Length: 577
Image (cartoon, rainbow, N blue to C red; front, side, top):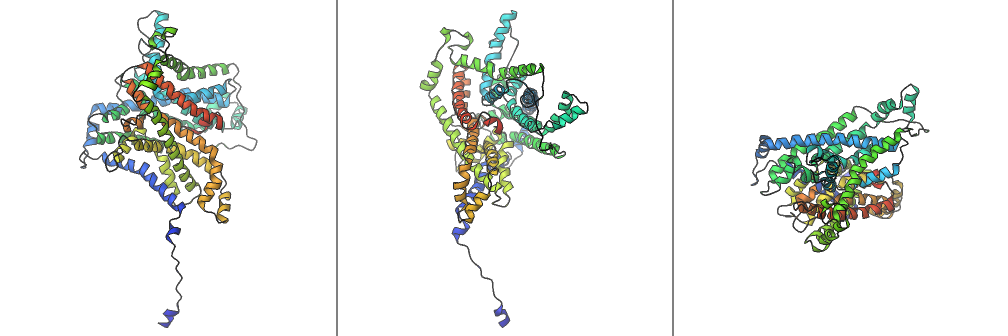
């Protein structure tokens, strides 16, 4: 017993509650809870409700219904064909243009990049409206010109068709391909092409055998993004596919949210779309994981431009044709319609009016509220998304908690979730009591935050990785807290990058359609929702005027980015509907 008493026991020091729950640790816990509420819970709820009856009882009937009705299966088939066609057409539009800007002596490069940026910020539903005015059967500008020139009674083009739908979506999705491929081409040195030329390969063969294989990851990523953009897009579907009686997954999901409301069936119908999305990204990892894609160059590696000779003018003409279809013609007809009494009467002083803008700004019952809601909701979403993204990026980059990569995966997860699917998950999670957020500003802002969190996180992560952690460690060594180091060291160094990230969330949030159409209420309409409300009346003059207001609002914020961050702040970072 005496020997036992002689054994010294280690002294145990209990930490005070203030040490266990210091402000920094509370922030990390809050970040984890926020990700669970914004990403984990909606996805889990979406899966669970797809196996439920309206009463809450377990059932497989929702899945039985979607595989037993031919109309639903046709929607899947049409959407997959649409996605494949759009993705391939985007490569045709964007790849030659990116190659010309990055690798050749094609003239007008700066102008092309500015016009691609303008195309990028143009809402797809606005582009669809413009092309209805341009290529509507018989009444469209291009068809009327064709009939006048050739003396025919019918026009050549019909935008209300499957090829018309593919074209309209692709002409506003190809900037993704341009951005991805140009960024990859800018990193490829000319040394390997020069070696191929020395061995007898011509410029064309060297490009196809050396350059394009090196940018295959970027091409594959661009193809997947544009495929998913086409499959999940709802704005162009409502504008073109619905009048053309083309059944698509996006339209079918939208109709499930009509009367009677069928959330359970919508959740089940969305599952294959979510599985296709995940399957594509897993396939991408498998393809790219089988090979390495690294261009090794020495210190003297450089990128020399290819002299195309007279062919450079042909490449410029091709880029001009694509941008004319995406920007010049649509903007001309949009402005004409916005200031016209009747757009079909063409350009004349007697047809000029400001009545469409006056009606929207001073007479329409909800237009002013929709404009204000758009600015407020988008600003709130950009601020919240950026704040959350900074916290996640800092935790992951500084290895502050174990399993930080889990937080990173949650932050990127909305990237592979189509907007419609995410909106259905939010509705299933938070529309009913006890929260009862259906139709409120809160559910819209939270959906926007989740939808564009990957954009904010990718920018915040890149910015924080560029800050040397030794400066923060110096604060800690001198007795300062982690939060003090963030406030006094990290935050001032991030100001410029944070402004760019904020704008890159605000701009797509201001034109967001899929989440807004599923979640808005009578008092929470945004400009994109109001746009589709006006569509039902068929008044293209007022639609065009609202589109001009939305464009002007967007361009004000783009102008801030151009002034503060440089011409290519969006094209370097990325940015859907």
